[in-house]
View 1: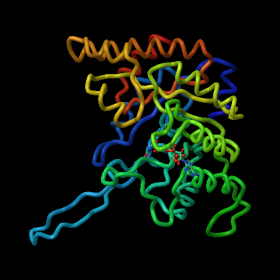
View 2 (view 1 turned 120 degrees about the horizontal axis):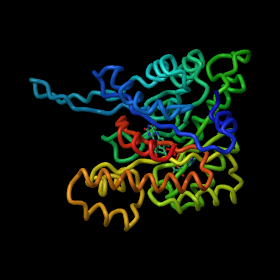
View 3 (view 1 turned 120 degrees about the vertical axis):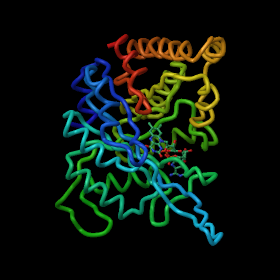
Amino acid sequence: MKITEHISKAAGKTLFSFELLPPIKGKSINDIYNAIDPLMEFNPPFIDVTYHREDYIYKQHDSGLLEKLTYRKRPGTVAICAAIMNRYKVDAVPHLICGGFTKEETENALIDLQFLGIDNVLVLRGDARHADAHFVPTPGGHAYATELLNQVIEMNNGKYLYEDHSAFKTEFCVGVAGYPEKHFESPNMKTDFKYLKQKVDMGAEFIVTQMFFDNQKYVDFVRCCRENGINVPIIPGLKPITASKQLISLPKIFHIDLPEDLSEAISDCKNEAAVKELGIEWMIAQCKELMALGAPVLHFYTMSNPEPTRKIAQAIF
Ligand code: FAD
């Protein structure tokens, strides 16, 4: 079922959902089930699975030659989505990214997803490779999420890039990312809203936000979206703090601010257990307020560690 249908069916009740990462190569599907099982009692109508671009490693040969190898650390998104749908009978939402895929590979991946009965995709540009200072498009691929979105929407209209298959239309409900604190490459919020509006005008049907720790950022973002004619559901993305080192890593990786109250309280914690407890308490308070504000879904970035999210969900659902 489409995410927009789940939201309308809920008739104003806030839903629960979460995101998982494919396990690092060499792990078992049981790692995925262990990350999902503790959260199923909160009835997620959908579960997101991230996609990860290939990266480089350098291999030193005995001859002294340094070889550049391409590898993907977390493959398996499509298969994991299929396993989730089969085992839990909930919708799996694969993230689709520009980086690492030619347009033809994207076309074929979308056909696979359609065959698997997947109704929703989250369309993103994708992160830069760790080895690159900034995002480098794949030759023959897309440079921006808008271009990838266009390909998905065209296929929904029966327009394929490589052959005429107009009788076989995909029917994906497409979501895109939103940044309450601005995408880090955008010169300003206005530019960010311009592209977000473009995505919605092209056919994106819902937005999932980057994590934030101050609900006012979400409130302002939703208001600005509405003022800019962006009227689709805006799903808040949430991540509880679980370790003191995240005071540095979260702003660095995700380009977000941590409120002073939160960062000071974390710094005052006596040990890591206290940090975890504080992170959960902060998120419970955030969630209660978001529910009161009418957020359609609370979407948790679990990083495949279900326990903090489970404690939060127990307190609010
Ligand atoms: P875009 O919309 O392409 O925007 C990138 C930048 O370019 C922005 O500054 C934007 O303002 C600007 N821009 C947009 N369109 C245009 C245009 N047409 N011309 C010029 N400038 C433009 N990363 C992964 O690798 N895998 C994942 O699974 C993943 N999941 C995510 C889930 C969520 C909910 C979020 C919020 C992020 C996720 N990311 C993921 C990270 C995401 O890929 C990065 O934030 C990336 O830097 C931007 O993605 P985007 O889709 O917003 O890009």
